[in-house]
Length: 388
Image (cartoon, rainbow, N blue to C red; front, side):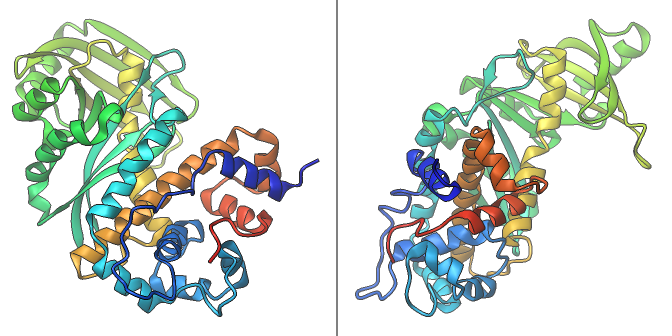
């Protein structure tokens, strides 16, 4: 029987996660002693080994387990000074293109779509939000399917220009993403404006907006009055065993920016919480085909970009604290880290389909990304990438 290491190598090789990933990235150096592919792959491995600074990557690059992944016989794979120089001269268009280059592969493996409920149709979902990392403001579009893919990143000058950057990003995404373009966009209350509705509907996409206060827009104020005096057009309630909460929903239809919309009031009770046991929110969506349960799940899904992208990047690679003053160098690094997180999420999904090898790999440890990668690094033998 194949040993664990060979089975892992075969699974990774069959899905071509690493092969040709950095082909086409230009090296401006004349006589480099360390190949550019090796340098870029070292950035890629930062989330894998939970390295939160270039100094910690330099330290890891001197270990035998790191060098064995490249078949490297030098005293280290690459130094932090070399890494900093490369980030400064790398053409920003090329790291951006890497994320788009991955999409056809993810599409073939069915990783870019998901069902909101067990029996609902597959949907292409995008989540647009802003963040502050390493001293830089940015907006990100995350494709939330079986895996989360930070497909597009855009730098911002300040906190207040999220809409200024968000609208052009929406327009550009149709051409850039092709078949992977999301047909349902999950947005926060900032995007509850007529130009956003008109733009996304013109692009043949729907949107779903989650907000706290019914007073924010007239359409939700009218729905609140209706629910208070007459009840909803549709109502439902249930218990969520995953989140351990009971929930109730009221729904009606209305119009905003000239488009028919569902207006939903969601109330949830979390009896085991010490604080915020009762939570309620308002949801407005142009997708009239969504069931009430799908609307509720989509509202929760909006947190994917915060919890399973921004926080994950910070947890695994220290992006919140990673201070790089040069915007070019920072966004080159961030794009490379986003590529890594997307590919590593795909790797986890692929390995999880092989239940026996996945269970053997964890060896009884609780599943977390860090635990799995630590076991992976221990179990894998021989070079994972092209020879040094």
